[in-house]
Structure formats: structure tokens, C-alpha cells
Image (cartoon, rainbow over the protein chains, first blue to last red):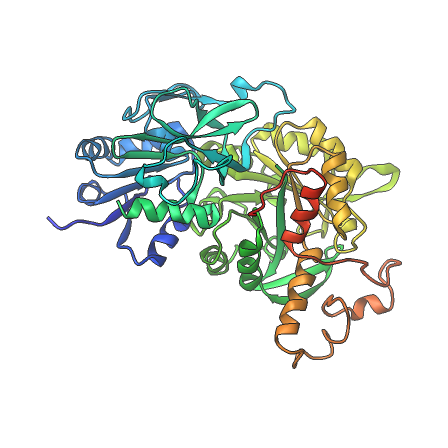
Length: 213
Length: 296
């Protein structure tokens, strides 16, 4: 069974172009697919990051992808969820109703507006925030210097988040006075709340680290 | 943190610089400018197809893909987005956010539908306005060609209610003239809405950005002249000033073809814009205690 290389899961609501580009530029074998038989043979999986939680889960179900992805997660294949993709890894989300996620990582996704009702707090969270970590040795963080100073800037674009107090937080970022999970990790499953593919050089370095796993 | 967003108005694959949305002068290839800005520290890019709505044609996918492929910062794409499939296509072609102006005034439900399917965070309401009599700001569409009778503040709130996650607000009157942002309007909008606001049109000097961030609650500053003229001058220098024709030579600021200004344009005879790099701007802001993303 030949590997399908890195597979970017196409569940109909992602900005796939910006993720595929840097991979192609690095000479990687990368496929965009929604087919279970392709995803089954992936050497690594990426969940891109734009859209609404409920709809995304529904599409995953409709394409028959929920079980495939859960099964792949068990095999220890590296998985990288980006933005919404990270949120889908969790147990549930309060995005327009309560939705079940893939439940690969324990925890709940919450609405920023629920926690910050003051209208002077502008939501969605759009822009560059410093991401920091006390971890020095994780492969994904290699060369990023997230444990130095206040960390590094990455680009965020979201209205929902995971609290950094949920376990599995590898790196954090601040949204006003609250710490949110910026990078989560459970085994070989990673998630970035920010968009590494749009975070300049350092974002591309993170993607490189993921590819090198 | 204040985001600095160069505005790239395009027609085909050319970058244009208008004045009050008129006298659109080609300054070079949009892709070249986009690439330079991403490297030079732009926090995002705003790419605006200036004629899509007016010509009633779809955005050009290959132009967007071309720009998207050479930058590693987010792109907000605007111009002729008039259906939910346009939204999906633009996102798939490399836009991170899409901005809708004209169509939202005709079928406002498009904003809601796009927000439901793709999330509010990638739906930007674009508003372009002219101050009318009695200090009322009126919304215009089709790239500043068509009046709507809609009042700016009320329409802005409606866009927020419909599901836009951000607004980019452009003062047509101030475009390209370097007289500063419309601080009164930006202040009012940013205090009355709870979604981020991007101010656009009017920046002519470093202080204009400082005024904007100190006197309003906007989250981002979008500007064109101050950056484009800086780049195009560097391009000229590197070419040794060769062969660009009379249109661009001999002036300390390359404003492109300024013929239409020589005889006056609504009382203006020049565009008093100073130009600078993004990092020069960010260093200036930081010196004034404004939080910006700057690689030291």
C-alpha cells in the first residue's frame, strides 16, 4: 500500500491554497483530498482552518471521514489541525449550538464573546499575537524560540478558542487578559489556533518542522 | 496591536493608484508589490479589484492565486464578490478573508450566508463612502460610481448584525490626497461597533497613523500612496532611472501619470504624500509607544 504522502483534508470549507503552497515549495508530495481511501494512506494529515464547526463536522460525516481520521490518529501518524481544524479535534464546541467534535483531544471550544461581553473587546480576534511556551524540546517548536522572551508573533483569525487551562496545551497566547491555547499536542496530534501558513517565515518554519516529523 | 495593511487596488494584474477613486494610474504589477510588502513587514494585504462590480465581471482567479502564491501573510480580497460560490472560490484561490461591498447592499443575506458557512472571521464588510451635505456620510458602490442612499453608520451596524466579522471603511474623498484619515468617522465607528474596524484612505505621513491609533479605536490602518510611492521610487532607482517614459521621471515622488492633476482636480494640484517603508512606519509607531509587530 503506497503512501499518499501528506494529505490535506478537504472538507469543503478550507483555505487549502495557502497551506498547499508552502508544502509544494518545499518539494513535498502533498495531496488535497476528501476521499477516505487516500486519507487512510496518508503519511501525515493536515486539517485546514476556515469555517464553521457544525458544518465542518457534518461534512466530515457526509464524506465518511470521521472514522478514518480517528483510526489514523490511533496509528500515531502526525496530524496537524489549523484554526478550525484544531478545534475539530476537541470534544465539543459551542459554535452556533453545541456540536460534537472528533473527540481526539479532551476539552471544549468556547465562544470568545461569551467570555468577553464588553463591546470594546473587538471579536473576532484578528491579528498577530505572541505565542510562547515553556517547552524547549518538542519537535514542532524546533528553532522557533517560543521559550525566549515573550515568544513570537503568529497570525490569529478566530471567534472561538480553547482555554489554555485545558490539558494538552503546548504553547499559549493572550487574548486580552485571558490565556488561550495557541498550540495543543497529544501524542502525535498537534493543533495550532493560529495560521502558520500565513504567519510569515516563522509560520513556514513550523510547517517545515511538522513535515520533518 | 495595530495592524498595518497595504492596499493593493488592481485592474487585471496591475496595481493602480487612484485619487478619490478616480484617475487610476498603473504603478506596476500587483504581484511584485504584494511580494515586497509581505517581506517588508505588512501584517496583511488588502487586494481590491476595482472594476469587477462596475464591469459586472467575476474576480480573476489567476491574479488572486498569483498574489497568494508569493506572500506568507494574510490576504483580504475584495471586488465583485456577489454570490456564495464567489466567496468559496476566492477562499480556495488563496484569500484568507473576503470583503463584500456592492452586493451586500443588494442582497444583504449574502453576508449572513457566507458567515454561516465560512465563519464570521473571514467575512469583511467593505464600505466606501462620501461625505454629503450636512455632514452625512453616504455609502457608494461599484467602486465609487453609484450612490445608495444608505447612511454610513447605520449601514455599518447592519453589516455587523448580518454577520460581518470586520469592516474595512474607505473615505472616497480622502483617497490618494494625503490629508490624513477621517478621524471623526473612524472614531465613531470604532466606538459603536464591537467588531474590528480597518480604516482606509487618506494617510499621507507617519503622523496620520499615530493620530488614527491615538484618537480612535480602529484595529488596523490600511494605506496605499505612502507605501506604493516608496516602492516605485526604489524600483526606479534600481533601474538606474532608465526608460520609464516621461510619466515617471524627474520627480521626487513618483505619483505615476499626474497629467490629470496638473490642471487641477477638484481644487487639488498635487498629492502631498510623504513615502516610507513599512518598517520605518512601525519603528516610528513603536517609538511613540504603539504596539506593532516588528522583528528586531
